[in-house]
Length: 232
Image 1: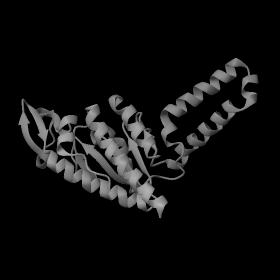
Image 2: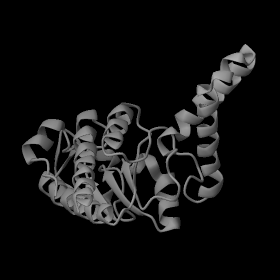
Image 3: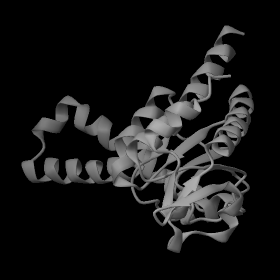
């Protein structure tokens, strides 16, 4: 399995910084080491242990040919999460979660086919012969669909795991996953209950460096196990 980030690396990335004590969720108490200047400090030893458990679960799923979707709507996380997902060839959502993506998958998936058709249309030689107004309308529609669904466009069925960065901001995705029986790995900051999450990872879900470290750890274990699968 991919090597876990060290405690030193997590400390340097600010993984240990939670929210202000006034915003804490009591169900996160077992994972809080201390409070400093009114800010909850996450126990990194527990973070490391639970990250290891999550990575092991993901590794087992990847060996079975399962799909993990990376999910975040945080502006500061979009680029690093997209890069991590693309590095391991997994789908992703880096915009606001579109309601029904899981619970109404067959209908939502029609947008994936529409996007593919529009891209093919724009790449065809005949496209330049269309009136400018029509070209612009097609481009605008494609750009909108790409922004919302581009990271999911290769999905042909519901995924097996959602990786949420972080759980507090992705409650709709979490709710849909639970309804559909889809497993969830999630970064859980001190303001969110970990109870509904299959593999919670206590961690700062706001700092870009912390998010990058965790997203790359997940991508790393996926790449390792995809490679092992190819070698076999």
